[in-house]
Length: 142
Image: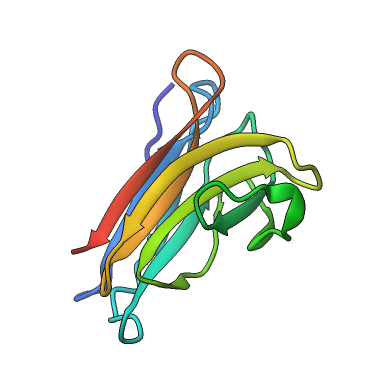
């Protein structure tokens, strides 16, 4: 099955389009990018959940190696087919973790990710090609 969709983009607007879901019911998510500069010394990160097997997720942005049992989610209950707003992060290393909503069971662990001042990124939670889960780390700007 294929997805056919007509999209209209505004002049001067940066956009991210993701096609996702199981092949029997494809979907599309169109997001307007906020590529305005983050505050001085910061990076911006948007979190996206397009993993139908994961469903809603609690997402953690933590220092590498942090035990998520000791912290609250950065974003709670990020719905399947949805994106968060951009999160401002002080430049440095972070670990992005997607857990099943309301649980501390890790589904996706992005490992240690380096963020430089001025960067704008999107982190996408996905189904793995052969089962399980995976992620994509997208450079929106810089």
